[in-house]
Length: 114
Length: 256
Image 1 (cartoon, rainbow over the protein chains, first blue to last red):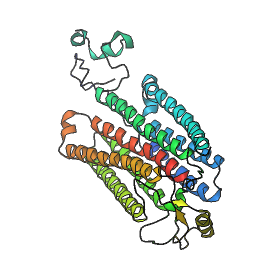
Image 2 (cartoon, chains in turn purple, blue):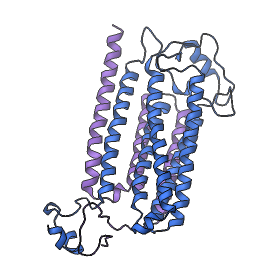
Image 3 (cartoon, rainbow over the protein chains, first blue to last red):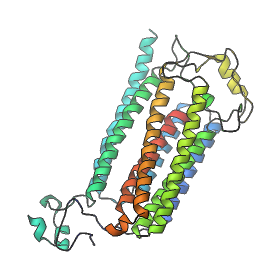
Image 4 (tube, helix red, strand yellow):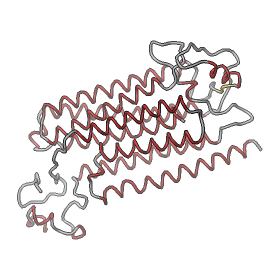
């Protein structure tokens, strides 16, 4: 592995690992996937009547898009697993918080109408 | 202490916990950008939590009508005044942002090959994409305010008659609100829209500023002298994060 630091020195602040280009093939593939999913969302919106299942499809494909953006564009798939985990694990808890407060929101609705 | 004596090859072979090297094998700047993005994700999550709670507590209330269907409000397209075109304009905005994400990642890839000319070219494309997105958002806000959206109230409570009227028109047909179609709705609707898309738009604006700075540094040869184009990667991480947030804004504010 190559480094940009001077030989024999390790400088924590200026340390930059050498990176290689992996070509543009994967990036364009990701672009077409993202575009395809967005078009799919657009079509589903008009073809299916509004329902909980349709919302589930939208959220599911939102998460798929997030996976491709974070994994391929932000390169997290190719980083060390420890770095990926400290980024991803807290966001899972956030999703739990959102779900919990949606439930609480529905309860508020019932209380308001009492 | 050990840092001055160990050679490049030997510190790379050190176990992680013995110190003296980057445990994640990334640079300091990139690690800090990731940590910043995580904190920014929390900021946006708190807004989404608020939005979700408000929306779920305003499905049907006896005082106001239910939370308005986004398709009935964001159905405008520039130059197509008076036509019912739900989701079309926001899909164009999404397309612009995805496209500018691709040009950004192509700039990063060109940076790995130390190709100054290509990095500059793709940075310009990315900046143009960002400016185009911001212009679209400005138009969207202008139209929404023009239709009567305010921070402190909501005139988008759509009545039963209003929904009947909406459902009677097809995609692309002529549509204008009639008296009795709209009344007062859940108050936080427009405020949450302005806060969340405004916050996202502010991030896009910051991203454009960062990209302009990085572009100027590129054409002045700063990264050539430095020997690497890592700054493009850091700016890219931020830009992709903005795209990522838009995926969720698009899903929760327009699709659902």
